[in-house]
Length: 148
Image 1 (cartoon, rainbow, N blue to C red):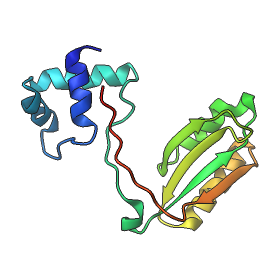
Image 2 (cartoon, one colour):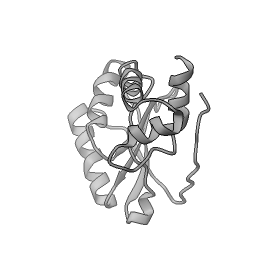
Image 3 (cartoon, rainbow, N blue to C red):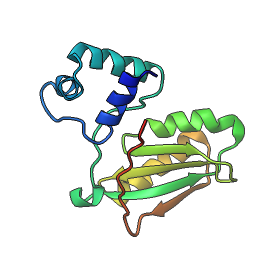
């Protein structure tokens, strides 16, 4: 990555403009062209450096519920399991861990029944029967920016 890439990443992490031309706004703040910012973001996404650009919201303020899930997935099913889990729009994070419960993911939905139903579907589709559902009792939101 060059300095421009790092500047763009630092700028868009938590201050992405909400406007009709957000990349132009970022470009203006960094003394770049809109095209340069768009090209850099596209390339950084293609290279896997940027995973997603999207909003974050406080689920409880929208009357949503969240849970942390841990699954015991056989090694030969990990890729398939992760693909199935990631197809659910309420899944916000999905991580491989070095533990007998080796896949951990968070799930946000309108209600607990929706999450319970989705977890049953995931289990049915994948054959993975050990999925822990660990609902959030207290929410801790922190702002994390990584200086690049």
